[in-house]
Length: 438
Image 1 (tube, rainbow, N blue to C red):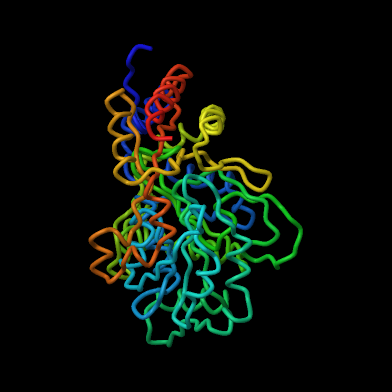
Image 2: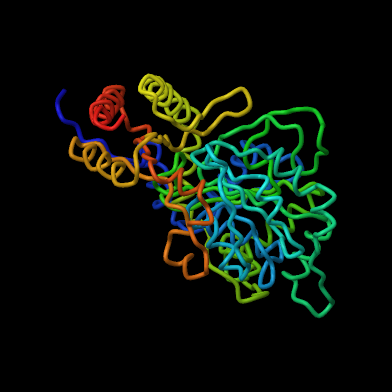
């Protein structure tokens, strides 16, 4: 077999994306404008959160989306946010940016999901949010999460924010949401999971034991952040989005929250640039010294093209996963399960574990695959192993399951630029390299 060069995760761009970018450049409008607004509406419809009013805001990144969500919830100093130890730094960093204390919990023994029993144990009267991660595109067990936050024990411990007439409007908004919610918020990190679905018995606003129904990630949790980074299934080069589906949603509530996403992402300016172009609408106010993390129309245009192609992109990922599953099952290699009767993954990462190997041997396998032209990766090095989080006092010894998951993990390339021949090449070389290890 002739040597090939297999990149790990290149963006899949084509003529549709090129045409959208050129059209945007020629239009004379390149910052947040009509293409971003159109993309927000398309995503709201796709995620099924548009029943009462658009409930999606496109922003500069998933990290910015998560941080703005937490700030709108009034979460800050003195509050605690529960985060899995086995995730990328953005899941935790956004909470730290908001001033909250991150409380890590371990993984399940043989799953990338959080240990839900440990989540329940970690709740205190300071807990304001749980940030579950749909790692690799597989939606986590939201039934378990909502059972935890709606339990009598958790609701009794919950202490909603209160605000006085003298407080600023953002604090009042957070207090209002927390008081109406009456429980810990589920703020999902859906960075990998656009298009993922799960069958549930309850979700935000629905009682446990209701009719089981398939819901898309983005319309399950109270809030969800998505990433459109260059390596993601759906990309706008950089960028992301926030969606919300609160149990007390009304069109008025959604309009208020959408307005606050605009304020928070555009310096606290009461009108965006597009609104100011209307005749006589030049004047604006700055309601607070806020942040700058909006999405541009160049990015929005790329997103419109990606949206048109996305069903085909997801189908191609599913076909590649089927070939990887067959090969790994034959080898006896553990791997992430993307499709079951309970959920449908977006197929973002193909995570494998080489049972019996240690960290040193895993590194050897990655090096040997690279020498054969195949780029692989590791998802993830648990956050308590990282310098920044060790400085906050976290120790990997307290998260044995997360370390065990990391210790022999290898992620195979999974993207829509792979041909069938490329996939066969990856599989054959993976088999050849693993002969010495399994």
